[in-house]
Structures are given as C-alpha cells and as structure tokens.
Length: 245
Image 1 (cartoon, rainbow, N blue to C red):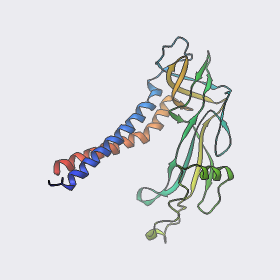
Image 2 (cartoon, rainbow, N blue to C red):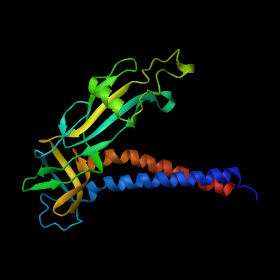
Image 3 (cartoon, rainbow, N blue to C red):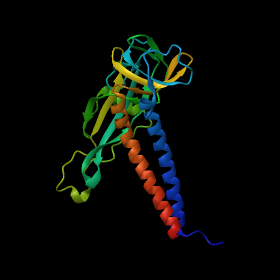
Image 4 (cartoon, one colour):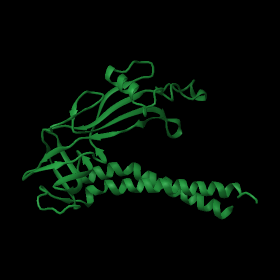
C-alpha cells in the first residue's frame, strides 16, 4: 500500500496543530472575557449558584497568605514571571517569558456594602508587575531567586542565549541571556476586581485583576489573539497542503 504524499502528511499535522492552538487560545480568550461578561455586584447574598458576577473592593486580611518567592512579600494571589533576553523579530533583542505560574489562596473582598468570600485557586491572575531583579548571565542572582531556580524543575537552569549569533557578534553587543524576575501580586489592603461564579455562597474565581475590566481584558487577550491568528494560519496552510497533495 502506497504511503500518503509528504505534503498531505504535513497538511494533516498542520491541521491538528492549528486546531489545538485555536482551541487553547480560544479557551483563554473566553475565560478572560468573564470580566466583561460578568454582572457587576457589590454583594452575592441572594445571587443564585452558577451566576457569573464581578466584584470590586479591598482585599481584607486573610487567615492564610502566600509568600512570593522573589521578594518574600505576603500576598493572596501572585504570578511569578521569569523572562530571558533573546533574539526576537529581525534578531533584535527582546525579553521572552520562560516561566509564568500563578498561585492564589482564599481571601475576602470588602465592597461598599458587604464582604465577599473568594475561594481558591484563581484560573487567571492579571496584576501589576513589580520587577524584583535583573541578572546578567555572568552575575549571581539574589539568594531567594537562586534558591527558587534550583528548586523549580519547570524553570530552565541554563540560559539559552549568552552571546549574539556568530555572524552578528562583531557588530552587536546585546546582553543575551539576561534574566528579569518579576512578581504580579495582590496583598491585603490592595484594590482588586474578581470575576467568577457563585458557588455555595462564595465566589469561585476565574480572573483576579488589579485593573479595570476593559483594560485587563485587552491586556490578557493580546497573547491569546495572536495564538488564534497563528492557529488559523496553520489550519489554512494544512487545508492548502491537503488540496495540493
């Protein structure tokens, strides 16, 4: 039995890859859009289970807080971001995110008329960024960051880019391999907006944000929309290859 032509095999692979990328990116867009779809309320008493709502207020003191790994700050939700300086478009230097986990714990939000209990964990954390340290490839990171890197299996231990590509080395002197360590955190006393579904008198959070719903949606959707475009291109390319093959 003859094997399928190479263009057809590649077309099927591109179709599958594009479909997966579109599915993942679309799911993220839909989740972050909860901030815009949710009904704004200042209390959830009397709100039916499963209702999608949005509350804004001040984070109350929590029974249990998290400790951010880079700065050692107390928080109730955070994203730990590690970026590495690498060649980007046209080989120009840019920071590429290589590590971006989010964590949260249960906390309360005080609104003008009530206190709303927020469960954990949050699916998406969209908070203001605080750069804790920027470390070049030849420098030792601060103790807390060094310990985090050694203990985190999902974080690459070695930098990928430590020098410009060989053909450009004589004319370029970019600090490839430099890592930037940031924290996106919200702590007791901070203003926050939480969108989620009401479950047993608590808010099951989909998105925890420190910005306006519109601004947060625009910021979070950029990467996902790019993913949708890439996925759509892969699907189109796969269809074209199947037709040609």
